[in-house]
Image (cartoon, rainbow, N blue to C red; front, side):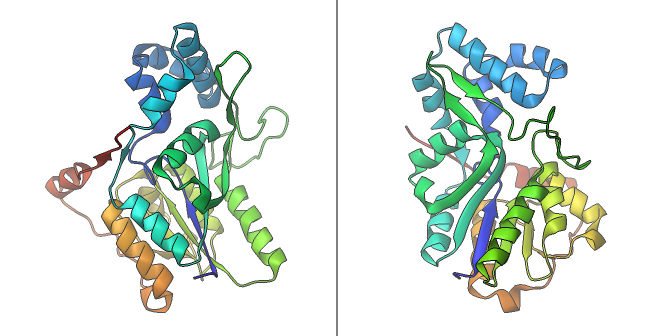
Length: 269
């Protein structure tokens, strides 16, 4: 187990919603967000929304309280604690932001279980306003990856993780869990000894279904927190017998709706 690095996306993987839009919606700024959305990049938009919240009297405390009420499946936290206890190196690679992610992980009591968080910077300035900026400055140092948004290439981050593992001189496998289209690029960087865990019927799952031959890693899908826990523990505890790829079965509309409505847990403050 000490030879396993588990890399989690955050929104719709660890938590069951998009943390950015959750804050905007819960604090009543959805209409403004939707009007501004076509006019600027996502990170700039979120920084602008934090300014609007500040100007309208919304405090950092209120933002934190909203973040602490995010939806999360009840098996996610136990799964993370279990795999950490087995000696896995846990990391987050997310296009959310550091302030949101750390606020939620600290509230859940699992921040210290993650050795690294790769995400867009997020902090509180001297005026008491949340500031959000891109992971890379795409105006001066573009990553040039056509698969990823301009502010972050998760594939490059996975390559850096692989390079650090190689530098240690140890053999480690990577298990990558994600849901969005931005998680497709890192799936292409994984090796045959690694595992890719796409969330079923989410964008990354669709992209892998369409481009299966491009992914070297063994693929193991999941639909909710309970299945995530089951599949992840199996891969960690008994990886040799868990190397058969999922067949990406086609399901009917009723089943798809049922899976979309699987229960989630609202965190109590």
